[in-house]
Length: 449
Ligand code: ADP
Ligand code: ASP
Ligand code: MG
Image 1 (cartoon, rainbow, N blue to C red):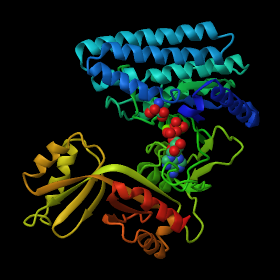
Image 2 (spheres, helix red, strand yellow):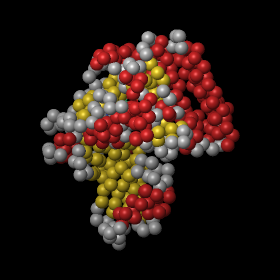
Image 3 (cartoon, rainbow, N blue to C red):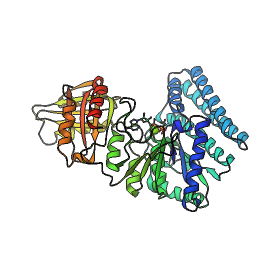
Image 4 (cartoon, helix red, strand yellow):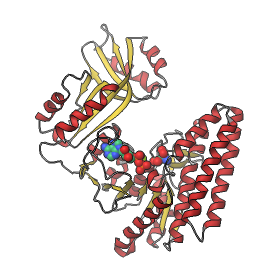
């Protein structure tokens, strides 16, 4: 059971969380205990990102002030949700912040924040929230244990976007967590964080608590992975763009991955992988309305005939056009081209080709200039910023050729820069100007939902 930032935002939210877990345990066969994974309190990771940035800019005082405000908020929530464990938990929170204040001061003096130090700063939100939630369970009379996720979730050393070592993590999860579950104890871990084999703190990347939950769920062979959040499930479009989208009651693992990858923020894009490997259903639920059924994600879910499943969008991407009249279709050209992206560890999302050009989209533009310089060694290359990707997803796209036509018709007169439908035929991807996203999403949503 993973609870996101808004589901642990304040004492009331943590109270609801305790009730949800209690109900779940009461329903489970033999009172089997769930494993609980929590995010930092809402907004805390954003604030820690700012703190690291201030340190990098040498703004020691402003960083210290921001940390003090965060510490006060965490202490206030911790005090409100605990009773018997209060003194111990407040001391733990203070100790975590004391270490962090020292670290941030040192970073601000050096004006240097390496990816590794950044992870040490960002991890504090989950280290603190998970301790207070574990104590809240205990004080509510539920048997619970806090386990430092860094002693279980072992990752590579790609700091800020680390990948789990599944074999090692599963071995540790079975050794440390499984016996507690068997004894009916609710184990609470911070999401998002782990450690390298040498014990250095790492993180799975923003939004990574979902991924942590799926990793632990797969390692322990749980019956279900539940993502508790602030919406009623996966909805048919991003609610910040399309008002009143509908809840999608069920979808397939493949549909969920496409949607997560192309912007449905409710799930971290890697979440589905561990679930697929063990065929464990994933459920998305609303912690404010726990009685709702939410969305169930399984291997073989199929939408009703004639329907798409949902649409998602990824905003502010850059299109790179690569043209080479001479060499384009010569063998080895595409290898050279993609080697450039590989060298700068920049992921490409959409690719389309024509006889004389290849167009790709990228999200991460940190290395854009260097990529263009390298491409210029063997081709002409230019880029266009402020573009976006809209992705319409549905298993039905395979069998129902009318869906594609209806989608294109819905976008009538909106300039489409690239269009692609990949081999899975589970999605249609449109690349268009970012400023066209709101009305394009509205029109697609109206046409299909
Ligand atoms: P949490 O803190 O619980 O992890 P997130 O903010 O990461 O929550 O994800 C939930 C948010 O994702 C929702 O509030 C919603 O605004 C956004 N969202 C975007 N697209 C979708 C979608 N297709 N279905 C559900 N939520 C979506
Ligand atoms: N707290 C982390 C973040 O905000 C991880 C998560 O919430 O999933 O990115
Ligand atoms: Mg999230």
